[in-house]
Image 1: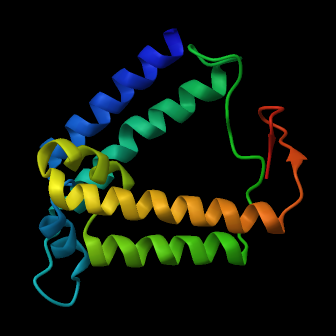
Image 2 (image 1 turned 45 degrees about the vertical axis):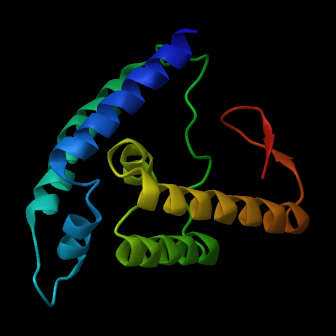
Image 3 (image 1 turned 135 degrees about the horizontal axis):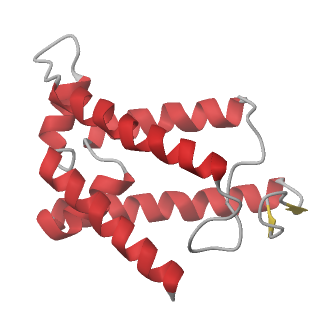
Length: 152
């Protein structure tokens, strides 16, 4: 229950921050990405401002033995850059540029601008499902180091 409450609080705070900063507005995001046209640099300050609390959080996390609302930290078990990671990042960036949305702002927009966000969220969920189907055929199951859970 404590973990669900922390997740709800974090999600609500994140969504409020996205709405307040304008990062949930696709036109503003496209303006930020249009570096050779009518560039709008305001989101650079939002993203830069997010680095400050994240830097503090990483410093605190490094000193903790366990998280406050879970048994262990769920951190990536690898730091390698491979073709899958790079192609996924490129695909994410293209989608962000075309739609002006990424997953966080899209969920926020379900409350702010439901119709266009609903289409995006459905397409995002379909893409996740297709990815899961494709990768479940290609990769053998293995145990992850950080959670002990079975995964890819």
